[in-house]
Image (cartoon, rainbow over all chains, first blue to last red):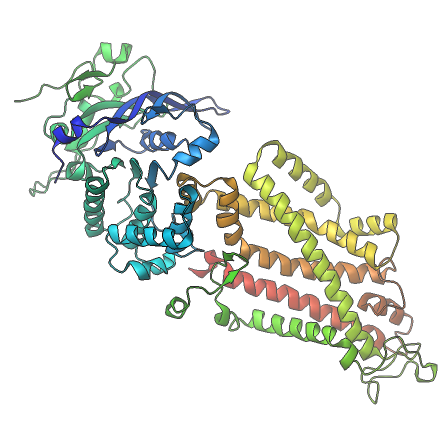
Length: 330
Length: 294
């Protein structure tokens, strides 16, 4: 099901994030939520952004839209060659929903209960396109059918509470895709859904990127989701990307101790009923900037890990931030 | 729920859809139906006052002064022989006028200031809320008395005083509502679609705050009537010979022993109307507040 990497590799870079740092000034001192994220998305590619709660994946995503209240960002975020961090408020609004779409985690609360689905879709179109109501309605119905809502006309006139969770998430995706954006950010789009619906939504995302060439940044903490549809994965820990690789490579041959620990923490299907593995310790909110953030929880950490922060080293399709990478078995 | 699907266009007012008001179920709530019934009686009788009041409310007939209830004067007469029922019906107009003016002024100023303070925050929020704090620091009634003392008595000045002192409470509650709605997921989703502040306010915050606004208005109306009656009773509000319920109460005080109906009747009228507004608002809150539904 995963798209062969070579196709995506030929496509031009759509989104480039370089050394993104996001901090929240606070009374008790500054909180650094994102500490040096580098990430590249090519057109039509699905990239997974994985990490545990608080690792900064959602903040990274919202920073692309510049919708993190009270945050200060530095570094570079370029979409189609334009630097987003320097854009004015009106220019940024013009990009949101038009070139960048976003799907949120909870479809139960992400649609306004006061309007029909159709009303919300039409409004979304008309924010960016000078279309009349009739033309906007036609486009909305097309998108609803595209996201697999077979009874698009009925969904169009329904209020959110009249739809199931899966249908609402499809409607949300239709709204995010309404202007056929170049980039779709999906922040845990399947977390609030049932297992069967999860799979359907993932299939839908995969189909949409094929049909529209939309690049998808998929934020998740579920490696099974990554394995299912992502071309590449970036693993985040404590605000920075620690490992990046094509998803099959990453799951079969993890090189960062944290990635391997994550994979080991997945319950196996083969009936091995031992106690579930978990990583000792807890992620630090304010890790020492002069050390590897994972060192306190890492089995292979050395003096060097506690004395200096490893840089992100890229070779080929993979990137790694570790002094003592795991050996890759052939 | 299945009933609602039949008509998707229902519940639309002035360009935005109301968060579905369960219209007919509302009448099953005894508070709403009882309060609504009393309000309807007062409203209809006030509107039809020229036609349904049995006598001219100003016509004096000293030979028929201080008549007890019954006979051709259904609720009796006052010390000048004016028909009490007619004055009561005409007085309903003043009570409703006070309620309407106070609600409209508090609503417009309260919505605007609450929105600005809650949505944009910052120094504007600080400025507005400190102003509100100052106004709220005075007891409402005292403030109204002070304002009438400055402006002088009379219906118009009383209206101004009551309307202004209704604003701060409205601002404070509405600001809190705006803060809540601002953090809603669908507001974040709207921003991610490129909606600006104006669209967010118009399409998301205003329509979803309508339940609270309706409740605030009905409770506000009750307070306004109570304060107006109080001011008139103290001689600071409506001046004779206008048929105001509070003023009627004051007049009747002197004849409490010989003609207790002069105070009882307007007193009951004030009580009934305030009670009606209060339970109507309570009932609406029960129906409209989604947090109480599930």
